[in-house]
View 1 (cartoon, rainbow, N blue to C red):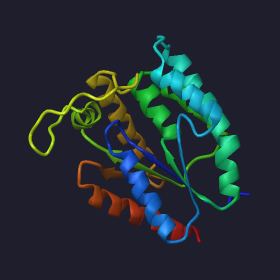
View 2: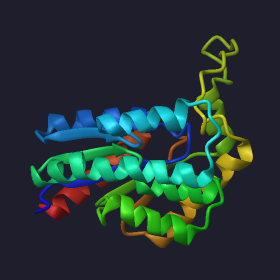
View 3: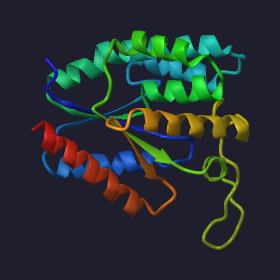
Amino acid sequence: MRKGLFIAIEGPDGCGKSTQIALLKETLEKQGYDVLLTREPGGTALGEEIRKLLLLGREKVSPYCELMLFEAARAQHVMEVLRPALAAGKIIIASRYADATRAYQGGGRGLPLEEVKKANELGTGGLWPDLTVILDIDSEEGLRRVRGCGKDALGKDLPPGELDRIEAESLDFHRRVREEYLKLALEEKERCKVIDGSRSREEVAREIRELVLEIIKSNA
């Protein structure tokens, strides 16, 4: 029986997910909630191995192979981590979930959306977040953040960071990902909430906190 709450934090690369997830966890734990952080791909021993193959491997991976590997990791994640945590009454904060597959493999890779949706249904086993926060950011700005192409406080150029396979994709790819996230948000307005990720981290954190506390209150 589902007792807990499932929150997914989504968005294009460079949107600030990691920072906001850490701030949200701190906020909820201070209020006495039992919080579980997890991520996709990953979250389980098997999922972390798949993550290495998907993001750090050097072999060329076909779009359909990529899709199936994400779903395999997700199916294990749902069975081993997510459903037990919800049954135990935990608040789950996940860095990415099935909406990322629609955005990246559907939007970015161009796989037919109906096929991606069917694959997501298999991978999730019908388990979807209570709330999905989509941190939106201009694709060029997101890639500048990820690739370290900005400047530090003294105006000195920052060195490029180490990129995974998906971060290293073209600007057009990342624009398609962003567009698909925004389309999704229009289709699922009740579950998916878009937040401007280009603002200060404090402003973004405050808006996320308000959304999450509201849904906690409504589910009480």
